[in-house]
Length: 337
Picture: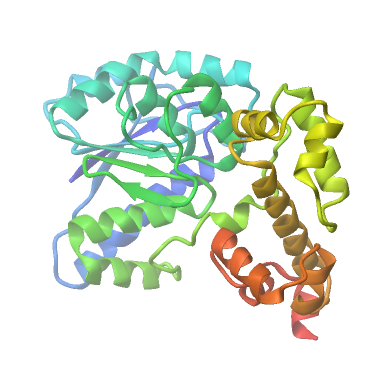
């Protein structure tokens, strides 16, 4: 199976190396179990020159796009790692996507031939520009979501999965460990579960990627232009540990409750109540990370009276219990003591 890895400036250099290292580890695992190696790979940039990732350590491409398309063999899989760094401002996002224009017809032709296309984080912008994500929710790092909504306002984003397999398109969310988990997904799909398990153990990693929700707790929610919603947000954040009368809040802002809900939905993709729940969950996460307060007390600190109700809400949104979250993100000193 031949894989083409598309390289762009400002991608995550360590992620590119992780892809190659994981493919090499899989081939090693296969050979050790008396099987033939499965994967071959090439790196391709627009002009064939070395690209400069965010870490500044240049990566030399094997081919330019034109050279690669002239080869007798065609790749079975195209992998599109991030096209830009997640924290890039929107003007640079637009420029990065424009710079990738030459690969858009390649994406479309590969899809027409039934080949597999894989995007990681903002690589999904390229598949979206090629018109392939119209009916498929795209995955990306949470810091890129606002850019995606701005560039493709009619398309959907999947915020609940780490990897989504749509058959001939796979979309992955991003983050440092996603690259290895994505390759393990490909290994399980094409080389079988046993090989995937053996390779994951060889790399000393879990086979399946963790859910993304625990990492979203500090997601920015002020990147919009509705001043009234910003005022409402500030009020909710200031009084989040109290009972909030949303009808009264709407009246303070001189609008109806219905208008308040509609404007929250447009700007933040949630209701005022859901925003309050998010703020409370974020504050609970912060207390779990930085303090030794028992979970029972944290529930009351963030404004809930019913402990079991908040624990259910926390698990639903974060996809792990409060105790499990503290084990993952709490202070090592606190955990030891």
